[in-house]
Amino acid sequence: MALLTLTEAELRERTSLKWRTFEPDVLPMWVAEMDVHQHPAVVDALTEAIRRGDTGYPHGTAYAEAYAAMAEHRWGWRPEPAQIRRSGDVMNTMLALLVGSTAEGDHVVINPPVYPPFWQVVTGYRRHLTEVALTADARLDLPAIEAALDGPDRPTAYLLCSPHNPTGTLHTAEELTALAQLCGERGVTLIVDEIHAPLTDPGQTFVPILSLPQAQNAVVTFSAGKGWNLAALKGGVMIRGTQAEEVFAQAPPLANQSTGHLATIAHTAALTHAQGWVDDLMAEVAARKRLLVDLLAEHLPQVRHVPGPATYLAWLDCSALGLAHPRNHFLTHGKVALNAGEDFGPAYGQFVRMNLATSEEMLTQGVRRMAASLS
Image (cartoon, rainbow, N blue to C red; front, top):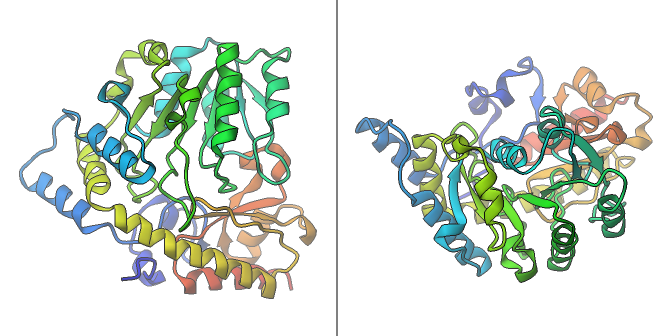
């Protein structure tokens, strides 16, 4: 059964950020909320918890066990129980790990264009950014990374997005191994956001960094929130490599208490019962990616877009359109809300990010509105 089929009328009954930020005549295709109904197992788990008044504090290792089982099923790798801790959502967990392993004034490496909270979690807590942009084909620039690690900033931490948001890049085992070795040789704490890990196109393979023998100095943050559309229920896990015990030990004491019990219940149900659901979803997303390529060719041929093999996001280069600010133009004149490229890095003001986890009708309407706004 198709998942991305909800109508605009059904979706506008929602009260979340995506559907209430803009006026009703604006088509929201920005924030990473998916236009799907929740998996029945998640609905049942939450409904039963509320029915029995199970609304206390989280307890136990069910989430960690569900994550480990998923990792073994999907990627043929299973962390040991001692490597996994319950935590909050991915960005709060990254913050906790960053605060514990760095000091105010330290430099932290990121790879623009990258998810906006990566910028905020560094600069908002009195650390400084060392930017090493992705290459023109959206790969990690390993020579530039090495130069930055050895440069005058002397970074003490590295925040990696894997798969990469917004480009949808899947980092290879070779790239991840090289990066981990560069960081390990210099004592740089490598913290990896793998929240998009299950969201790969059919036939594509995600490489969990901790499945690599040479990357056991890394620490991973994960949540089912993105893959199963559970952002309202904040929770997650952090997983350390076998050589990263110290990073866990340095984390603030409350780092593993920032999740909610209902989030743990919902995420565990998703990881346990809805693996096929996310695979079905990503087959539909892959179809949307193909549709977007066709729609752009027909209606916006000047827009450059290379579909990434992961995530349900599209990174669109609007430079050839001659717009002062593409995101504002499409919002004002096309009534389509997209993410502004400069939020992912100051050099990307001519880009927009589009959410493809929607129906064919909504995607088609969005691109047609964008094209009409230029006439």
